Length: 128
Image (cartoon, rainbow, N blue to C red; front, top):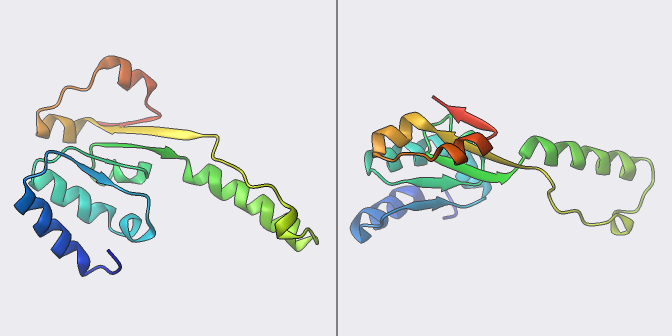
């Protein structure tokens, strides 16, 4: 998908294909439409996982991915180094080190899914 209008086409293909679950990939366009995706998934009774924890309060079932706030803090340090004269090519490439798990129990209940207690105990965020 390259623009917002592509969601209608994608949603239609999902319905026609009768998929069993949905993965919302890490993409800026997806991030902008997380509430729309969560709403569609719930209406279609599709368990959905995303990489953004913000997906869960928007109504999505589950999110697991790098902490965006942690990534932003690390990026800020890089900007500071560059503004102080460091060459971007000399800075190391870093992988995310903090990941977040978020679960929406209201959505799970609406989908008829029981979330194991062991998973709830590991979650960084649980939406009731």
